[in-house]
Image (cartoon, rainbow, N blue to C red; front, side):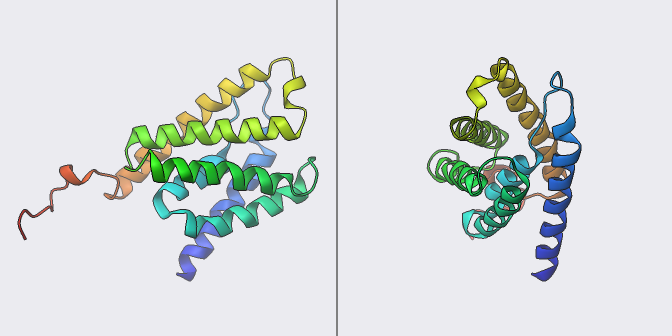
Length: 170
């Protein structure tokens, strides 16, 4: 249990540092994926809200200290966007297919972008629409790479009817 907590902390720390120092500094012509959002959404799908909520709260408080928004806004944004994504996961995207992962990462990106735009000055940018679509595409491509990496490493993403170990009537 402690090993997973240490690995999760290490991964989120590396993802946060890489997001804030490298990805956010790319030129505006490049689509900028949100590595933190993709990681937390995949963890939400694989582990559930009860295990991920503490990670979301802790990471959003750290991002509150580092962001230029008012204190507490990142916590609100992350909790609402991943909470709404969790509602979609429970009610609509119940399996762990590529389509479910795609729908959830796209909806999480939409939720986070719109909530940040309402809290800040996201609507006043001239090319906010192209950045928004670029981020959706970049997050989706990153999610596809991570999905197939997880599927290659672990067999739990295969649907039940494709399982080789399924036993009928026993």
